[in-house]
Amino acid sequence: MKHPSPVQLALFAGGDTGRLERWLVSRHLAKCVECQAEVEALGSAGAELHALAAEAPPDLNVNWNRLTEEMTGNIRVGLAAGEAIAAFDPPAARAPRLRWNAAMVLAGATAVFAVAFWVSLPQPQAAHLLQSLNRIRTERIGKLVPGHAAPATDEVMLEASSSAIELKDHDRAMSLTHPASSDAVTISISLQGSAGVRYVDADTGQVTTNKVYYGEP
Amino acid sequence: MASRNLRLLAALFFAGTPVPAGVLTKIDLPKDSPVVVRSAEYGELSETARGGAMLLDLHAALSLQNAGPRRIHGITLLVTAQDVTPGGKGSVTVTSLDVGPDETFPVRIDLRLLRPLQASNNVPVMIALDGILFDDLSFYGPDRLSSRRSLTLAEFEARRDRKYFKSLLAEGGTERLRQQILESMTRQADRPSVDVQVVRGGRATNFEAEKQVQFAFLRLPDAPVDPVGGMARIAGNEARAPRLEVKNRSDRPIRYLEIGWILHDHNGRDFLAGSVPADVSLAPGQKSQMLDNVTLKFPQRDGQPLAIEAMTGFVSSVQFADGSVWIPSRADLAAPELQRVVAPSDEEQRLVQLYRKKGMRALVAELGKF
Image (cartoon, rainbow over all chains, first blue to last red; front, side):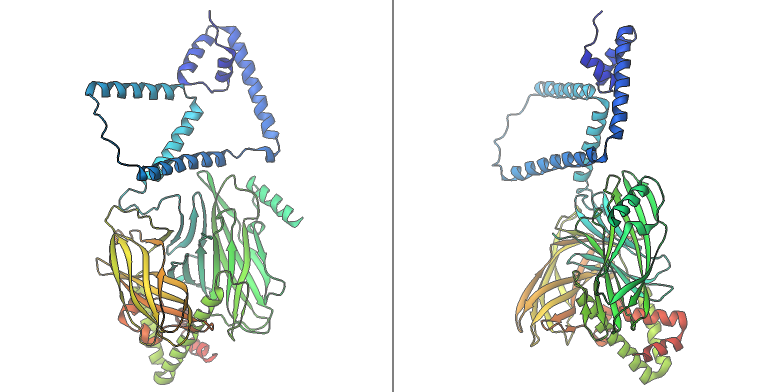
């Protein structure tokens, strides 16, 4: 009987194998006690490692979300750069048209490659990639939806409504609100970069204006 | 050490231990500040997880005391939450005050922060003084938000409106005053209000074709500035990149001006979109251009889509090089186009509220104080 390699067993123990590989290794483990013991040992070592990592000082923590944002940002910059360069490209010579059978072969090969890539990708990475692609798709296509009130999400935005004023910046926001019992709520916008709401306090009769401002450009 | 303790308490909070909102707030007033914090009450901090972020609600009720010899007529506090909006800031301004030495007055701050779970445990909210305007129009404070100008404009409007209401009282008695106050209340109730989103830059989210629309101008007889021409780009419910040309028709140099921007939609509704301000250096007789690369979006409200058809501009305030200001007179504001959309001043709003809550006698007594 041919055993999986130690690397394959280690990846299996950590849940880092693709779907196809996981299925093959599982089939082998069902019949091989020796490899089962090896996977169990690797699993308990992994658990100990996680426990040790949890006790590590916070300064050593890696900000995975920040890394994710940076990676997504890099992809976005790449796409934007591509668009910018495309605008300066000379008009391309007309490409020869593919015959239908050649096009079918090309499409089939692309589909096979995409499926193979997806199947071989470990589950957590696949989920992460899907999430990132979805985020980029939403942000880019969001610009084209007709009548869509929400602005592009990569902008700092000021928003004024009768309930609050808000400064939004990606997944961060600061709002100044006022009591629901306030009277005579009035919205004001200054194009120099501020949004305000004035209200009269029902208890004190005082006139208060809350404002939010952009940061420096 | 204090800062370290605050961080520790904040860390405990984020570990799930409820703490008062005051722990996450720091009030920083200069040592020679003409106001001191008499008391600060904080409501219980509420936290709600929202996806990968945390929503914090902070409520503070400050009691400030006038520690100086002059009467305070307005104050602006600067509110920053650096972890939440790098570079962004907020302010809380109280106008139409008349606080004598040693007297106290309340300032209420209701703040909501949305921040990532991984945000640092620094004290997230700082409250500082931006400026105080006194009854003699003198000013104290760092003025990072141009509070001096906005408080001075509010003070001039307050003086204009008190003088107007006092003249009504003198000429027509309480009945004439009551009639005007009721008209003001009706106008306030009828005044259209829309929600606005402001994005810096010129990106439209609409499919609709963008068109360039010329401004019409409402010329106020005694305004020191004459709008010469202007246009903006309009697409459906978006208006962006206003460009205006103005001429100084006074004999004094001007350093700041604001043009009010009224939008008219396809259903015949008018509303005040905002103001186009500009820091200028405009000698007598000189022309200047005002540009703003900003997009205003007006989301649909009450199921009625808003499609902008036309625009009107008017001069809403001017500051001369010597610091003095010009504001429209009550006669200017009586123009039907303005009366429909321009909100009453802070002082008119306060006086109307006083009448609603305490009646004519209290209003007359209040006008008698000035």
